[in-house]
Length: 336
Image (cartoon, rainbow, N blue to C red; front, side):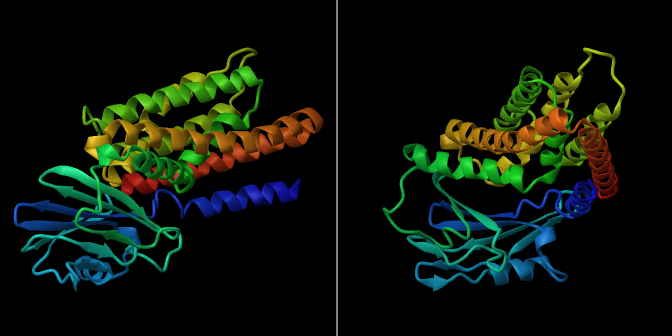
């Protein structure tokens, strides 16, 4: 039992430093007429001390028309509240070919860089550069419109959906909180389905541009949802009263806006919005399902064979989850 408690404590201490480090950066090439614009988006947490603009320029391994791209007077905007730096530079000519030699943070095996290409306002290419696919080459006539390549979009955004869950421990802890108390298959199915329906609604609303609340409000509310579901597990409830489906639905609406943040960071290909949105959402569900399938049998076994141990796991786990949520809430309000 002590080992179980120590593992739970280690998990809670570890996730404090993980929350919302999506490891995702972006490079956008927008070609229009006889010139182009190169734009980069990077999380400040990935940059060291010093000038963000200089660091981004040094990391941008971009070769245009056979020559290394050297920016002339780039624009740099730092959004401290969102924790993001934006870098933008012009290219005075027609881009026929270009290549990205590596992602912006190749020393970090978990980092990923989205490369987006548009021409005359139309999406041409959308790809992910990561440890598995470390380089990207764009050549004249070598790319098709994103709308014509649905399998490519499905593959990329399905993977992004999975990664968004497994690199976002706040979402993981919320799911743990929902299933930690256990219960019958019907009860768990109702809870997970309520969460899925709710976050699918707001993910679609935000991704389609209908409404997207600022992240400075959404992120603290996500942290509060973790605290709420943990206390629901600790609360002495009357027989037959299970509020988890309603809690899952209510806070699932908030988590959906958080998922949308991960999707929009990737640069949604508007010509294939439906494919991107659906595959990202399916990736999120696959990641959630894997967590539920891995944890639920263990919890059910403990509840059936070792009820005292099960009670202690639920109680200790809920306390740890509540502490993590409270830490994130204070941290996100403080830096909002």
